Amino acid sequence: MFPLENRPGLISLLAGKPNAETFPITSLQFTMRDPAAGEDVKMELTPDELQHGLQYTPTNGLPELREWVFGLQEFQHNRYKGEGWTVSVGAGSQDLIFKAASALLNPGDAVLVEAPAYAGTIAILGLVGCEHIEVETDTHGIQSSSLRSILENWPKSKSKPKVLYTVPYGCNPAGTTATLDRRLEVLKLSREHDFLIFEDDPYYNLYFGPPNRPPSYFALERSQSEVGRVVRFDSFSKILSSGIRVGFASGPESILQAMDQHSTVTNLQPSSLGQALALKVVKAWGYEGFASHTANVAAFYRAKRDVFEAAMQRHLAGLAEWATPEAGMFFWYVFKLLGGDDDSASLIRTKALEHGVLALPGTVFYPNGRTTAFVRASFSTLSPEQVDEALRRLREVILDERKTRGV
Image 1: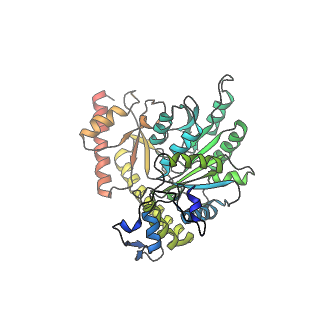
Image 2: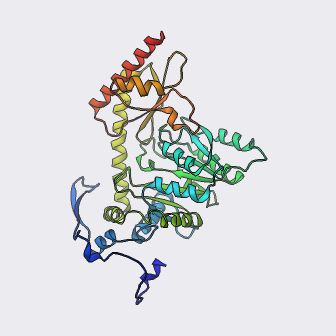
Image 3: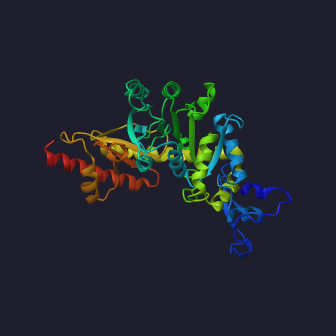
């Protein structure tokens, strides 16, 4: 009933909102980096913007921010209002993924999950009580041939999966970006076998690979003349701030409405103040300015990637193998010559830690917990000196282990 309060002339006795006169924050000023000029610009929330930022707001997000997101999806993905989809703002994209899974899946349902996959989503699907069905990936992203084999050999006595979860750009942890051919085949399979695609895309704006990158699933489904199979998840965490906890979902209206109902009875809404700050920044930039900013961010991470890979070549050439990521902030590499033991977990959790270096063993990214020699390393925050020292220490760990095992 809350939207009814906006009717002109209506006197509302409805909501138990606190009176804004009691709020101690009376103004909010900050500086913002102009992506075009590279200079800091002073910004201030207007009294009206601050009022909205300090008070309860609609469950699905500030109306003006939602309108901006509609425009962004048109700008980036060629999707338009009126096509049967809507948007909803959440407390980060992970919050929205959990609510989408809760809305669509029941305990015991089978879910298709690319492997390796983001560990947070593996945990979400575990909480919902789903059965993970691993779909293989390689350096070209999700293997559509693996997906087709799974679906065509699905037991007739068992309900087919309702959902495929995938991270198409800069996959966390593998760093891979799915090719256009793979994406089109996945969309074709979604129609043939009637499943939805959860497109988790926090690294879409951190793409630094070759030009003419493949379109998103959200864009492709419109070009294939059938819409409504993709639920897309975006995030401001990697491009504005991880702490403001603002993400947004785009997809079929009925699904997002169910997600909003979940929010209504859990956290009520995403942070109003976080939304107000994000909106102030992106409105000041406009869509072209937003594109300039994200291009700068992508270039920043490309440079970080190049520094990390150069150090990998210096210290781990011949001891590990990896593919060069085209987006995101992770390297996914596999140890070589560990005497037949293909499990990196014990090495990372014991000897690497003892040598003063931390990484994540690959097993945590496999839905069914398989052992693997792969390791994930993040290159997002370390200085070149820290990168070089970390990989030098890791080299020592591998050489010591090989000596111990007589390899």
